[in-house]
Amino acid sequence: MSGLSYWERTYGDHFFDILIVGAGIVGLNAALSCRERYPDARIGVLDKGMLSVGASSKNAGFACFGSPSELLDDLKNHTEAEVTALVAKRYQGIQALRAKLQDEQIDFELNGSYEVFQTNQKSEFKACASQLDYLNRLLYPVFEQDIFELRPLDFGMQSVLNEGIFHRLEGQLNPVKMMLGLKQLAQAQQIEIVSNYEVKAFELQGEQVEVKGPKTLKCSQLLIATNGFSSSLLAEHSVDILPARAQVLITKPIKGLSLKGTFHLDKGYYYFRNIDGRILLGGGRNCDFQAETTDRLELNSKIQNRLDELLAELFGLSEEDVEYRWAGIMGTGHQKTPIVTSLNKNIHYGIRLGGMGVALGTELGADLAQCVSL
Ligand SMILES: Cc1cc2nc3c(=O)[nH]c(=O)nc-3n(C[C@H](O)[C@H](O)[C@H](O)COP(=O)(O)OP(=O)(O)OC[C@H]3O[C@@H](n4cnc5c(N)ncnc54)[C@H](O)[C@@H]3O)c2cc1C
Image 1 (cartoon, rainbow, N blue to C red):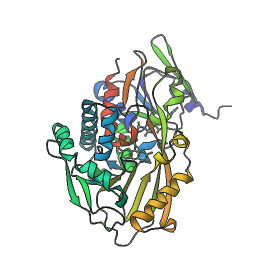
Image 2 (image 1 turned 30 degrees about the vertical axis):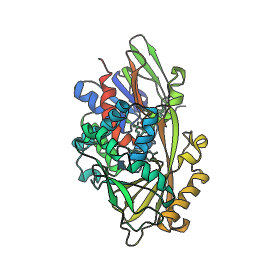
Image 3 (image 1 turned 120 degrees about the vertical axis):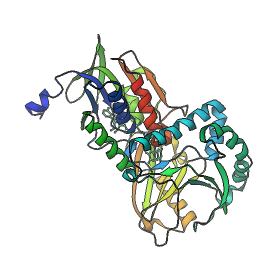
Image 4 (image 1 turned 180 degrees about the vertical axis):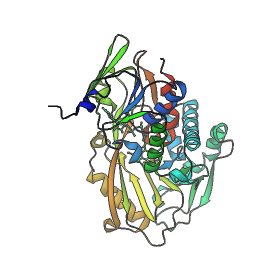
């Protein structure tokens, strides 16, 4: 017995023109862009979760493009042109998102960001500060201004240098409001969003793709937007994608918390911000890369302990001040650049957004939709 009603069983008997696997920021944006290109197509988005299980609703809500130490680190493994293109894609992605959804709807605030350095990171600070002119020149074509500047830090933090590196165009938002807004847009465009549908496999049969899950569905074009969960679905296709778990904690409300903006530390491996008078602090994957290469939504005590230590070092707070912790799954690989490509003329995927998918997702979804040919 499948447990499905007659109506559930017969749903999807009719052919979909386009099916998208994954209702995260990429999948929903791909669906919206497909609708623009194909106003009359039947478009469905399948997700294994009730709400998204993925990173799009579990992230820290940073609208960010890369801190100086992270960009300098990236330049060791990528060319200047690749790094500039990636930063441009992130920046354009946030602009495209803000063109789709109102700032008030997603609590978008353009408060800027700081890269901060702990007192034991003086040499890292000097190395970054000495490269600011270079980074500003490199990124001038993207931001049309010198984007990084040194600024005094005065947010009541402890054990940090009293100067940080400010980026005036980085912002912050509420990821769940973003996802709800995208879902509303999709539903208003007659895009069918199907929850609790886990795609187990897919197969090209002539001109059709058969999608196997709780019920077999058929489509002409299949778009895969499963990011950190892609390795099993794409196992046969040697794709450079690995799951990367990311962990976050949030404190209880803190009286007089004056943090404003978003904050990066240590090549982007740690980040924090103020949300409703609480500190959200995340990161630490670099403490245990091996264990964090997983798509299991569990907490890792080694990393949570490191986050607790950092909370104490930066704010003098203890474990008692923490209210809640969670983990989410990102998609990474040996390169930082996302992948949008086709397995054949009917099946395409857009994945590997790393830690900046909020910024990249809108544009990547649009790029994925460009692979479709009906
Ligand atoms: C803790 C954390 C903090 C982060 N902070 C930030 C940040 O501040 N700023 C930023 O820019 N980025 C951040 N990121 C990264 C960002 O959230 C992601 O890059 C982005 O959300 C990826 O979007 P996506 O649509 O590609 O994937 P996801 O949002 O992961 O969506 C993939 C969807 O596919 C579904 N799915 C997977 N497999 C299947 C299957 N077989 N069948 C059906 N459905 C399936 C999942 O349920 C999921 O809903 C963070 C990530 C985490 C985890």
